Image (tube, rainbow, N blue to C red):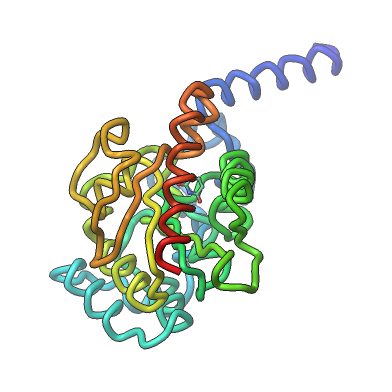
Length: 268
Ligand code: URA
């Protein structure tokens, strides 16, 4: 086979894999599957260590089977006396399998003194690479939406600042929805995060955030209505990723942004 044809076949195979949803290479070294298929189980090499954030020594030591991972999460979160300690507690928490597939732990971004704290769902591919929440396409839309009412994550003034986190600090494989078990396991960290940042109000971005903090889904009905979550006013909104797919819903999102702005003015 000439090398030009070789090249085009390789490219077509790669594009086919992308269409199937494989959007990243996980192994660090190439594996010759033809050679591997010819080996007996005894001859098979040990699997290479997976890339991810779970491999550090502290995590390894902690990963010994724990009877109740949720109780362990509660204990670790409650022991954190500051946002920095909570960040460290998450990075060394070894009882969530999602961590194994993630490149980074995505803790938060913005100004922790902000009056408004946004809680999204989970990091996507861009966030996993950069270690910050909402930095991909949806994040850029989120920044534009909040800039329209004078709020920004890089504002030093708490009155016009945003603080941003997610229910999950680790990217689920293929960006799938988190399971109820994963949400329950990580909820103590989100709860402590909100306690420590102590924002005046929360914005719950999309269904996963509403499910975790209000115990309800159905963002189309929930959005635009103030609720209470973790003892604070909480406004459910359409997730910016949803708005990218459904631009007609931007009108409702604008309405919600104006509601948020009005409440911030009222409670100055
Ligand atoms: N979607 C989210 O919910 N959070 C992110 O950080 C990025 C995309």
